[in-house]
Length: 74
Image (cartoon, rainbow, N blue to C red):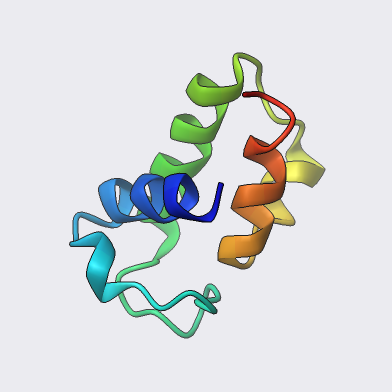
């Protein structure tokens, strides 16, 4: 799921997935700003087929957090 998480983040941040380190965290990657985070949340919701609750959305701080949300879905 890390590869899929990276792809969703790349699309949300409008960048190439290859430019995203595996240990990326919000605040360490310039392109992962508030707008990219909103796009990411929407993409995750579409992928898993449900809305995230606000606590889930704000807990997304790293690529591993994205992958964890995607894992149960597929």
